[in-house]
Length: 91
Figure 1 (cartoon, one colour):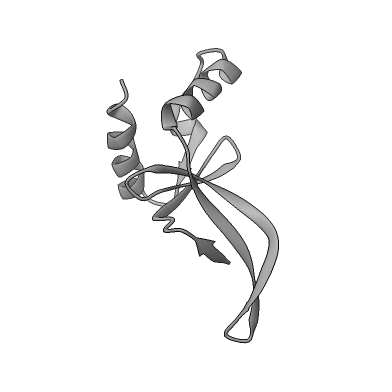
Figure 2 (figure 1 turned 180 degrees about the vertical axis):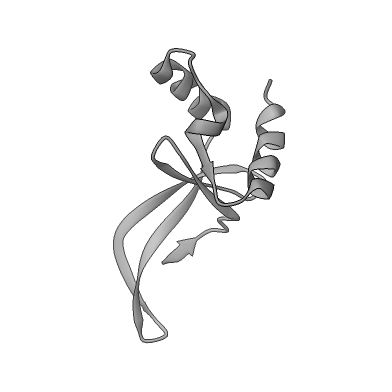
């Protein structure tokens, strides 16, 4: 995959592919492909998204029974800690 924009590290939130690079981003898969180093790669767009708005939609969907550790799936505990610190700035 080729990312248009700097994705930082990756995680999922309620089946949505996301990334964090100092800002919250949603990863949008594209139907476009490119030829890169003799390999066909799909394009993924890194789209900055308002975290508060995203979180409000999750709260509404789960009717306030939102468990951060169950909704957000990270690849490492260090990435989880980094993103939790970011998310806590919105309290």
